[in-house]
Amino acid sequence: MTVMRFRNIIFDFDGTLTDSRRDIAGAQLWALRELGFHHYQEEDLFRLIGKPLQETFERLLPREHHPKIPDAIALYAEYYPPRSLNTTTLFPGVPETLRSLRERGHRLAVASTKKGAGIQRVTDHFGITSLFDRLQGSDGIAFKPAPDVIHMVLENEGWQSEDTLMVGDTDADILAGKAASVATCAVTYGALSADELSALHPDYVIDSITALPAIAGGS
Image 1 (cartoon, helix red, strand yellow):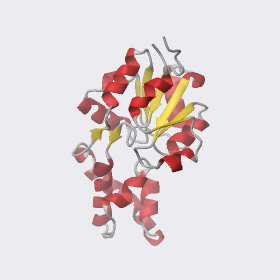
Image 2 (cartoon, rainbow, N blue to C red; image 1 turned 135 degrees about the vertical axis):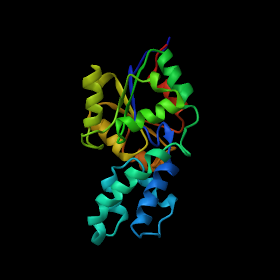
Image 3 (cartoon, rainbow, N blue to C red; image 1 turned 120 degrees about the horizontal axis):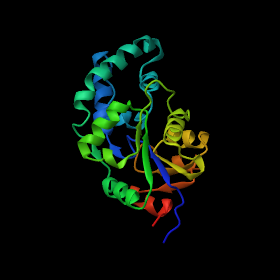
């Protein structure tokens, strides 16, 4: 029997559990082009996946066009939801790993910049909603790297920070986990490289979600 190191595991969503880059970037690209900005390609936007839309469009639009950011966000919000599952997939090993963790007695949650309804649309589509104790979106709360979304999970589920691991693919995920005083695990197959993630000093770095049960422990 392996000792359970972390009873509770909180996941980022886009870039950690789901490969949604092309659907999200495609919607952002459409919004930019509707506003007259045609020089970006989808691949240019991948590194911004998971960041709040306000920050994303601040980076993409020239400063003199920042007054158009609310329009860009509104266009994205119109375009993305009905197309959010056009190309989105679960990363390899995700459903099997989540089920293995549940069988070992772990409690699982999502803490995402996405809205809660958007998270559940995807988890329902892939038949994994029941594997989670909580799907926590950033509806009306501060975005990561603020720890608020993690605190919401811990407080509402009654979980202890010392028993909890935050898993994510961006600097915001790792910094939010540290700010919430939980252990952190970076995955290298999402937005950032292994070197970029290691520079943030997470407690663990993995190249595949299938490595997670060995870190989390349990029978």
